[in-house]
Amino acid sequence: MEIKKGFADAIGNTPLIRLNYYSDQTGCEILGKAEFLNPGGSVKDRAALFIIEEAEKKGLLKPGGTVVEGTAGNTGIGLVHICNAKGYKCLIVIPDTQSKEKIDLLKTLGAEVRTVPAVPYKDPGNYVKVSARIAEETPNAIWANQFDNVANRLAHYHTTGPEIWRQTDGKVDAWLASLGTGGTFSGTAMFLKEKNPKIKTIAAEPYGSAIYNFVKKGELSSEGNSFTEGIGNGRITENMKDAPFDDAIRVTDEECLEFIYTLLRKDGLFVGGSSGINVGAAVKLAKELGPGHTIVTILADSGARYQSRLYDQDWLKSKGYSIPEV
Image 1 (cartoon, rainbow, N blue to C red):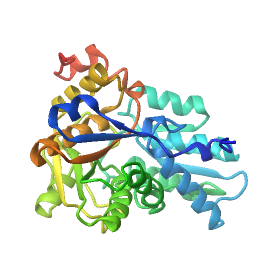
Image 2 (image 1 turned 90 degrees about the vertical axis):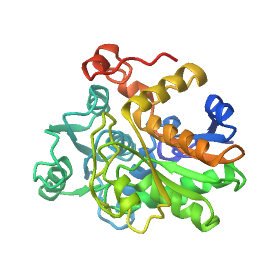
Image 3 (image 1 turned 180 degrees about the vertical axis):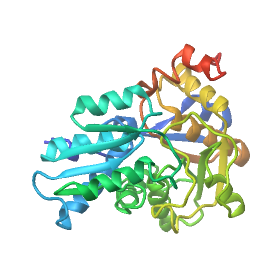
Image 4 (image 1 turned 60 degrees about the vertical axis):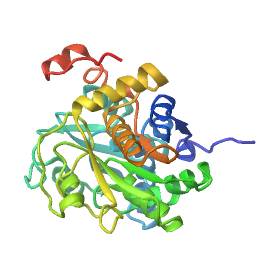
């Protein structure tokens, strides 16, 4: 019988979906890994599971313990689901700029949630640094530390990469993903490069991320900003170190909106902003490579977590955008 043994066992093995509209338009097979179908609703379920299980194996997380993390939302959601299933407490520190849907969901799931102002990483009040201090001060607690805990990228090296390889019968020309912690991109890229060094592994980046210029010029600098959440970084995390970057493609917020609304109207896929960046970069690459190539990317989470923003006409108008005509 194919019965999953609880929440954790249901993580992964998500389908690879052909994005029909853009595949037909470009002549390439553009495939999206449907990570929004994980039980916690995002790609971050994978990292959350590996981080907790690694802490258990090392004896760092003991019965009744607390998992503390600084997160833009999705990793925290994955962590609290797994903590509930395993009997741990969960404390989440999140920037107050993140969507109301994610903050409310964390509270509904049972996490203790502390919102803090959004400030740069170098600031002691940055949500990542605040979470580290809280973990250190809390008895019987661990700091998940998703940015620099390489259990994050190992989750994708051991699961996402092998799944993509199997699902495509090894016929992959390119892998693209945006980077926040860098775990999804790096772990998957490392696995795929081992299987076939000719596979192009490309960072898909919004404006405001320094990773684009790091890949292009070898320097951590950025221009502009983005309304996307959970992606874009100003530093090289431990999860990004030694990752194989072949190139980087940048996508504007306006383009991101066009891609997520087209996915919704043409393919019936309701996804968040990072998926718009990912698919946008995949389409740009497809046009560059020409027909006949297979390009794989991540559909990281559902658009339901951004309904009050990316899918709300008033919010978009307040930012100078409008719902695209598709």
